[in-house]
Amino acid sequence: MPITWYFDFISPFAWLQWPKVKALAATHPVILRPILFAGVLDRRGQKGPAEIPVKREFTYRHALWRARQAGQSLRFPPTHPFNPLAALRLCIAAGSSVEATDAIFDWIWGRGHAGDSVDALAPVAARLGIADPATAIAEPAVKAQLKANFDAAMEEGVFGVPTLSLDGRLFWGDDAHDFALACLHDPSLWDEPEMQRVASLPIGMARSV
Image (cartoon, helix red, strand yellow):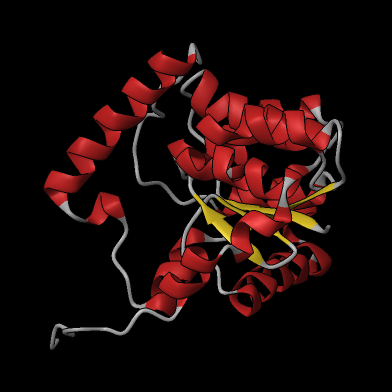
């Protein structure tokens, strides 16, 4: 079963799910696809949680609490939201590997450093063996791969990050990881009668915008 993880370094919940995805990647082939969350929001006509002031405050506290419950370090970077393009492109320039993804996530969310520019990410790039990160992330092939990742996400129907795709079945968010593993181990769970019924449940009322 093809497994793909769509993520953006801007998301604290992607950082919270990352150790679980890394563990999954140790036993199953997992394609890591960094994508621009802002692009997803634009395409789906949504606001991000950090764009709604009261939701932003709750989301940050909730992320900190979930990290505490998981025994995982989480330190917010100096500003949030931030522009994640440099981090996304650096990950791709480094092969979108487990090692590159781990290093960038740890820099931003494990240590609380900025990840919004080439200069801010220079220590991570050096650790990944990229001597000239500015040139590396400006490569047309890197930009093309980021766009291809986004196009693949849209084709699959991704509407948020992080999202784990199991052969096109989407599991959104860190809190859906156990559900994803259950369906990975028993794919018939997805096709149970009630699971199928709610997929076509009639809409009783639609909000006019």
